[in-house]
Image (cartoon, rainbow, N blue to C red; front, side):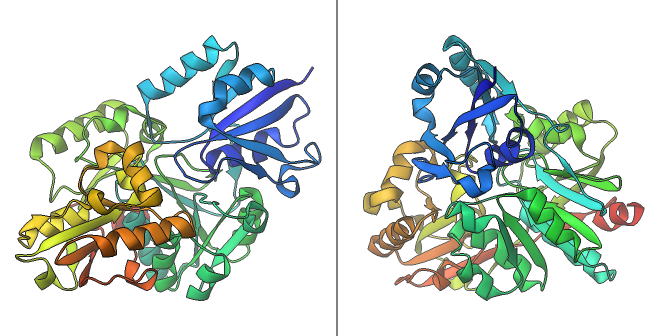
Length: 437
């Protein structure tokens, strides 16, 4: 008899694992997905056009809070854990719950989930959300393009809309962002590539995506999401992993970030310009203990502010990257560093003015504190974010998201933008490891 399966996910790794392992597998029947982390993706269906011949009605997506009832009511044999940026202890608690409900618990590895590409492959991953993957990927793409290589990036999935229409997405110009109805989170990842005249793919079906990308690439760069490991492998491959000394110890205590650390050819210790020396040394020691063969690059992410006078002596509202503050668990980011550097009078606590889904985000993630996460997974969230910003009593707004929010929402307060790029320090550097590769 077929084993009845529930896949726990967050609209990314879960769909990929289904596509490459379960979709046409007669030994299993996936009876449900569960969803967490990303608001609004439960109470949907994985559509029949993506689910394949064994699932003519598609597959229902439920909230993860319903998991015990699903195991009982759907007679589930196996639960597959398929999302990222979770502490090892949290993963084990979920496994214990699943086992107590009678089902087996499974973590899928690289062998059964990676698709082979015929192209040379560089992967950029991390041990936590918010380590600095994006600026690392951009630095690699720039370096390869400067050498005359035809580079195509493929981004870890963020399909939060109509899944059937998001099977394969190609972004080469700004109009593509509107065509695909991209959320703020999607724009933050795709727009910087477009500005570099670089092509980036994303979507839901990563085998179909790879086939399209291979048609126009000399080299493929995997741009990872959260701290997940790559969806692809190649006979010619370089694995780069970014670690964060602002969160020492996380590199060996979060799933599946530690998996990335074991697999790394190169480890970039980022943000050393703003981290404590003891924390940097702790991270370096952990990297050496886990993976002594990896080359270590030290790097900074120096800040640039377009109008620092809007910070100096002002009461500022700081808007930071949403996922970094929520499941990334960072208590501060580039906006706070910029506010301190340029001498703000005070940080304004936005929680008094938070409305709708922004208020709900604070309830779900109380550790965010006085920063405002740029949540934008839906039109409603974007409207709630806009109202929260505009109602807040502040002198100015510090925007520390990867894109300028002023092009998406109408901010009534004076606002400045914080940007940052990767800056390697000393040797070896990316030029060295790319030359060897």
